[in-house]
Amino acid sequence: MMRSINAAFFARALFALTLVTASANAWAAPTIDDLAERLADNAPQCGRFAQTRWLADLNSQLDSRGTFEHQDEGLVWQTTSPINDRVVLSADNEELPMGFQAVAPVLSGLLSGDWQALERYFTIELSDTQDEWQAMLTPSNANIAQRLVHLLVHGHQQVERVEILFTNDDRLEITLSAADCERLDDDDRIP
Image (cartoon, rainbow, N blue to C red; front, side, top):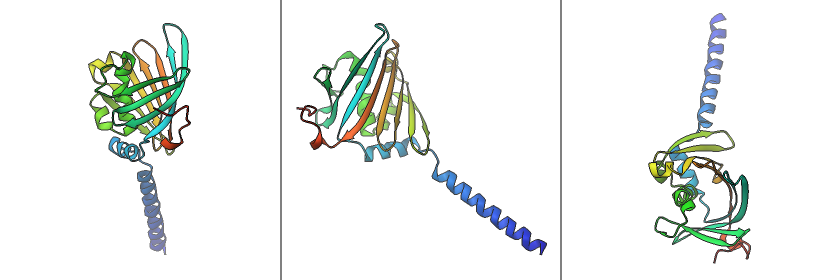
């Protein structure tokens, strides 16, 4: 009888351990490759953004919004408010404003899920909860490190928020949401 109770207890304990192990594996944080695949599979062709730029020297904040769209020429970043401005974020764009030069490869890589490109320029620390992942990108490239301290990126199936700290203490926070290219408002539409 005692042997039967011990065997039953052992069987239950083994079963419980199996469930705990399986559960832990199911909730394990994704690897960078897993995240890159998820983001590439869910990369939006078009979307909207809202951004806030804190200017440390002026102790002021600038808010703007607009749309983004992947086109043959690169990632088109169209600000629609408070001004209308169009910037093509691509490595081939020699006219890219200085402020965008450090951010261009980052935004393009993040929005397309090309984390291999990002790993050439950044050390990436990834953390995950059941509801959200977060990545801290610290520049490993000297040219980028001259302008950026780090980036903090959050999301679920897609990149949803990017926080950038610049070396001059300026900060940029961008909130992104996917949108159907055909359903962008007429005043938001990229020409």
